[in-house]
Every structure is written in C-alpha cells, then in structure tokens.
Length: 390
Image (cartoon, rainbow, N blue to C red; front, top):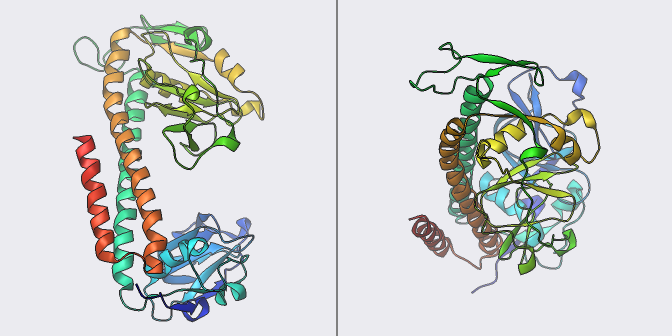
C-alpha cells in the first residue's frame, strides 16, 4: 500500500476564535450557541451559517461538534470559517481523530491554539472524501436513531407511570381510568394527599432486599473492554469493563437499580455487571407490589437535591414510597419491561457501532482501509447483530 499523502491542516481548513456572548446578553431565540461542550443554549442572533465544526479553545484538543445551519460559535471555542474546497463532513471526521492519526514528524496534537493547529501535518485524501464521510455518517446516524428510539421508549414508560401512579388513572376492574371514573380514595396523613383505596405507604428501606455481596471495582482498574461492564455513579451509563470474576453481579431473578450515593444518579440495569467502589449502591425490591421497573420510576420521583453534597443513600432509604395493588404493579411492569428490553438491545448495538466507527475512523483517514472494505465490515457487523437479536 502506498504511503498516505500528508498536508498542513491550515491548507485544509481555517479556524477562528468564536464570539463573546455573556449569559446576561443572550436573548431567547432559535439559533444554537455552540461552545466547547456543544450546544450551550440558544440566541436570537447568529454569527455563522452553513456547515461548520466547533471545538474547545482551552487545554488539549477536545470534542469536535458538527453543525449545519445558522449558529453562534462561542468565544470558548474555535470554529471553521473556510473548508477550502474540502468536504465538511470529511474534515469533521478527520479532526475527530487527530490524536490517533499517524502523521509525519508532527504526530503530537498541540494545545488548542489556532496557529499551532494550522501547522499540524495530517494524512489527507483528496479524492473520495464524500465516500469516507458517508460510510462514517451511516454509523453515526444509526447510533442517533437508536438514541432517539430509546428516549421515546423511556418517555413512554414515564408517561404511563405518571398516568397510573401519580394521577391514579390506572385501569380499574372494568378497564376504566380509576380516579376519573370515581374510584374510591382515602387521605394519607404520611403523604398529605389522597391515595387509592387498597394502596399503602412504606419507606424505601422497608422494601429493600439485601444487595449481592461481591467485590467492587476500583476506578484505576477500569478497562476499555472486557467481559463485565462496570456501573458506578458517574454520568456515563457504563464507565468501564473488568474481567475480575469475583466482581460479577449476575443471575439475578430480576433487574436492579444502581444508585450514586454522592451524585444521586439512578441507573436501571437489566444485564450482568460489576459495580464501582465509589459508594455505588444496588437497590432491589423485596415486595411484589414494587417490581423492578416500577421501583425505578418511583425512586426517580424522589427529590434529594435539598440535601446538598451528602451521602444520599441514607435519605433515600428514609423516603416514603407508595405501594399499589399487586395487579396494577404487575400490569405496569409487563409494559415497561418490553420497553427496557428494547432499550438494552439498542444500547449494546450502539456500543458495537461506536467500537466499529472508532476502529475505522483513523484507518480510513490513514488509507489503511478502503471504503469498500469498510462497507463490508459495517454490513457484517449489522448482520451479526441481527442474528444475535433473532
């Protein structure tokens, strides 16, 4: 294979510093304000129009954000003002993997300084830019579709929960909405509101089953890949992987909830996993009136924000929770279970797609993989995923 040509980045694209826009000067509008972390708000005016790329201006090279339309590039970021005849999506993917590209003598990505970036030499494809961008865009579009589907599924489960267990319009014995059809209600002194007859109030602590006794995984031992996903209280759903068998939490009769003692983040987990060693708590209900999918929704309604920085598990256990009838709980759980099984399938498909994209990205840019073989890899990955789901 011939050596991939290299080119000065400043001859491919031109970066410029964004524009200052203090929060108090922002006016409600339709144009996104794109900062180093992505869209940080909206404004009534814009400074750039068309396809664009924005990245952070401080520290080391950060995440690249592709935009298309009118937007305001913030002064905390650099944005592209001129693609110099190159395909914008190709340039976006090129910039995304600057730290992993095999460049010539300037292989180290500098700090975010537009002049330094312009002097960086990178592999360059003149012919076939659109084809490279298209194959990578197909992967990203599928990831985005899965994310949207998952968001809609979660919204459906939450909407039904609110309708049945907040408004109390779950189906009565005749299939009619309970409260709206005149279902009997009783006043609860503990909750200071009316609840359906036959429902009970309990503390979270009273319905908690003993958590599995397994070894937790220290953050320094997290791996990029492995047999067992690690769940902790970070914002990332899966924060790493491990191969330590004594950390494995699996074979549970039902899914469980992972709770961040400091962050108050709840995660619904319906697959085998290991937990982090940072105060992560595992919550399992021992009451048939509070099955796992319903338990997750009920816990999500508990507001612990007034406690500030604390060990929130103590206050969570003291919180009150409403226990419905077994039949209502069972009916809801059946519906929500189907939603979260599909969410799991989409999530792990995205994990595979991200791994494929991140493997292909630098290899396509370096010329180590042709678009044709990349398309074959994508088809094979999607076919294998379909066979696993079937």
